[in-house]
Structures are given as C-alpha cells and as structure tokens.
Image 1 (cartoon, rainbow, N blue to C red):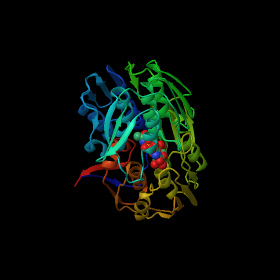
Image 2 (cartoon, protein in one colour):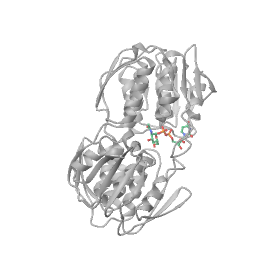
Image 3 (cartoon, rainbow, N blue to C red):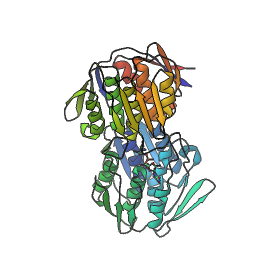
Image 4 (cartoon, helix red, strand yellow):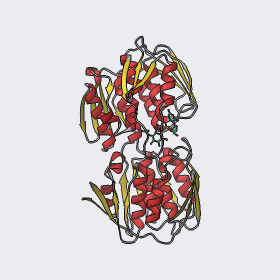
Length: 420
Ligand code: UD1
C-alpha cells in the first residue's frame, strides 16, 4: 500500500494550478445518464473517484472514453440499471445515479451506501423526495429498488435538512419528470449551481439557480442533449493549498481558481493574519510570520465548508493561541484529531467541538489517513513537523486530490510517494 514520506520544514514558493472540482464532476457525470447522446466533459480532476463513477457507467452499458482530464460519455447504450455494491461501496457518491436512472428508465437498483468514517450519512431525504415524485421505493438485500413505471411526476419537495447530494439527485430526477418540481431548502453550493446550469443549458427551464428554492420544469422523459462542459475549479483543493501556504508561512500563487467560491476560507485566513492578492481566476496568499488562532463553525455554503475543517485544524495547531472548531454537518468528522496529536498537537475534543491550543513545534511520526480531507490535514501538518512523517493509507487522498505530492513537490516540499 502506498504511503507519503514527508520531511518537514521546507519553505514553499511558486505557483500551483487547481484541478477541476471532484464534487462538481461527480453529479455532472451522473447527469450524463439523462442523455442518450455523446457528452464531452473537460477539466476533470485526475482522481480515483472520477474513474470509479465512469467505471460504473461502463458497467451499466454506457460508452466511456477517458483520458486524464477529458471524458466522452455516451449513455445511449445503457442496458442495465443496477449500480452494484462493488462500486457503491468504494464511493458513496455513486448514489447520484439513482435520480437520473429512475427518471430515464422508470426503474433502477442502487446498492445502499452505508455509513463511512465521517458519520452515518443516510440517504433518507433522497428517497423521501423521490417517493413524493411518485416513485415506489423498496429496500431489500442491501439495495434500494426504485420504481416509477409511468414516469416521475413533478412535486413540491421541502428538504428537512440542506443536502447537497439530495438536491442534485432530485434536480436530475425532476429534469425528466412530468410537470414542475419545486425544491425548498435546496443546497446552493457552486457544484449544485454548475449541475443546474448544465441541465438548464440543455433546455430544461430551471429558476432559482444558486438560491435555496429551485423550480424545475421536466421534459416528461425526453432525453437531454448536453453541450461540452468544463468543470469548475475545485474550491476544496484551492483552500487546501492556501492552508499549505499559511502553515508553512510561504507565499503561494493559485492559478485556475474561482476566488468567489473560497471566500469562507480566505476570510478565516485573513482573520489569522494572512493577506491576499486576488484576480479573476488566480490569487496569491501572503501569510504572516505568526498566525493568529481562529474560531469556526462548519455550515452549508456560503458558510465555512466541512470539507475544509480538518485542514484549518492543522493550521490552527501552528497558530499562537487557542482556536475553537465546531463541526455541525458530520458527527464523526474528527478522526484527524488523534493523528495530529501524535505529531505533538494539543487538541481537546468534546462532542462536536475541538479546542486547539497552538504549539511551537510538531515532530514527525507515522500517522494514518482516515478519510479524504483528514488525509490532507495530516499532509499539511507533516509539511511543518520536524523530521520525517509517513502518512499511511493515502488511498483516501487519491480519491480526491489530483497529484497532491507532485504539486507540493513543485512548490518545494520534500514529499515522495513510497510503496510498502
Ligand atoms: C457532499 C459532498 C461532501 C461534503 C458534503 C457537505 C459530494 C460528492 N460530497 O456530500 O464532500 O462534505 O456535501 O458539504 O459532493 N443527510 C441526511 N439525509 C440524507 C442526506 C443527507 O440526514 O438523505 C445529512 C448528512 O448526514 C449530513 C448533512 O445531511 O449531516 C449534509 O449531507 P449532504 O449535503 O447530503 O452531503 P453529501 O451530498 O453526501
């Protein structure tokens, strides 16, 4: 199994190009099921999760040509509507095929994703919303079996909780439903916005894009024709490199980034003493010599993203003072705490809040990645830890970070991938 070996203490400098957003690309790849024609996607991140979902489309009978950042997908040839356990268990986001498969074929079976390291992550809201659109849902032998033989019908859906994946699934389902669907308490993350824009560009009337209330007028099962689409920049990858700059006190420039999408992170970094030069699609971070502590609460967009919580905790560890970090979205998203403490951090956890006392120094050790974003927090801490840190189980990182070690090496970090 691969691991990353990092010798800490190197100053970083230079420029890094941000890849396409994994969390935008995944629903967009799922949305290609709404079409029976070729769809061309560019600026895909070269990460495992993308390959997993494209692989699922191939298993369903779709035709996929994929080369690093570009995919040509044609789902005109789909013959199966069963998303099997072997794929869904590798990646929870496979549940995103549920809405489009059901809407286009009137029936599908998708393995239940189950829990994961960061919490229970139920899909009850996805299922309840599809039921209100007329679907019959049965859960049997670990699979969700959804049926709507006469097609889905537009409905008024009020999500009890804001759900990114739930909103995406229902937007896709509503696109081919009969009549108008209204989603109240919809997610408005940039990734949801790009999915809505893609579907609207294909001729589906959607109002309220980027707000908490979406109205979608379905095509009554008529498949969509999508234009070639370039995936938006990854705001979480961008935020992670800003944290790399902050923690190592290094000036770094990010290219191909959307500064608007990462305002929650830049505002927190500003409160820690960092300054920025911001252009339309690039930005440079200038960290202070001594970082101030930070208080943050994770919440839905445009609030502070849960996917940046672990990375900010790593930065807070190296700040002067005490930070409070409250996680409101995923009950168990603190697996990085004990690993950061192994490096010498002083983090105290109570319920969903972590109190982080800044320390002068961290010391290299063997540590273990537990989930995707926690893994990048460990790499950030290792960049400043004295001596050598080995970060194990980096298959988590490979799911969502495009060439992390290559990009950090190019910035001057001493980081190599090793095989056991
Ligand atoms: C997506 C992102 C993930 C990010 C998360 C929150 C993708 C592929 N993943 O995950 O990186 O951390 O948004 O920004 O885009 N919930 C329910 N019932 C449901 C659905 C969700 O209770 O049916 C709860 C979840 O347990 C969680 C909260 O709602 O507490 C938000 O989850 P959700 O927005 O659905 O996250 P994902 O779409 O899975």
